[in-house]
Length: 501
Image (tube, rainbow, N blue to C red; front, side, top):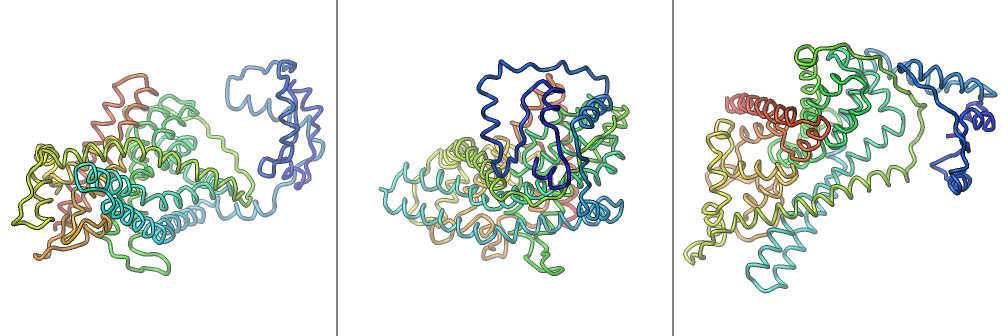
């Protein structure tokens, strides 16, 4: 960012900085590619570098003093503060106005996930349906064709259809992060984190967990306090990762009307925001419980750079979003693909002969009801029946342990049965349809209970594995599984009873 330094009147003596640090120094503007060629030249012979000894530090404060001392030596002209940044920060960092802006920001954030992604999702869903129908018509009927069309194409497609929503999610996150606002959000929330006994670095880890709990938990390595770090690890899965988004989107689309409330805000968008807030607030509450009880201890001072506001690089955001989508699609191509195939086999075995006196839909429903998957789902009814979950939902919960997104492909195969054909019309549309008795496949109360269950339950083996690795013990991941399942069960039970009432 040497261009930004010069634009604000700064001038750095590169030769003096090189002498202070003992390594080559070059000015670079990364998003414009300036200085990259010169930078590459320094890597030709790195063994010729003669670095100076960096002193050891006993605190955060001593390291900053050392950096400031060198900075003052090499800065020939002072860097003026950005007037725009100062004026905007008067609002965004205000104890009251900053919080209001933050709430408005996340409201627009979650409404955009529904509004902007809907056309692309509908188009992608239609492509999946047409491709599955084409394969079914072009290939000879039989076991392998059914596995390909229903188990693979429609199974994986039921998850991949949410790629546009996830793309919008990451685009907004990276945009506001690069613009400089995310650091301000961390500063505003630091007051709330302080109430919970944590500090701002914990918020950064929790914020990373909104993409995925695994890198969020790994990001806790930057937290200097062991107690703060462990408390953050124990509550990180409460934050709503991108894998939960497909489940939320389907149930909200099926059971929450797309009614306008205030201007561009709809009931569906605010419901999604409420679920994200429920997870985030719950993480803070349980962190406070742990910090004032099991992990009692003082927090350390929090230092955070507040970068100047800048318009993000479009190319950089595209690269970051594409990288995230590659990870998601890769998961869909491995775990979700395998899970969809296994589920299809469980739903279609033991095989029952086709009954000519029944319709195709009735035969398919009877096959599912007599399958191994149905037996597995029925075995869990004593646990989940008080929550309003039937054996079909239980199958989806089992599948979601491998990957939360698998819940959609699992339940799509269980529920997505049309009355006249096998066209894939979308899981949400299937759930919103009523039979001749006016009954839906899932009741409203059960759907609300399932949403709350997904907010709290630790349905992710990858998260369990990384917690074991980061804590070097099975004690804490087992503790997490236990207490989060207990919270999920109780919260879902209350939600179900309230929804019934």
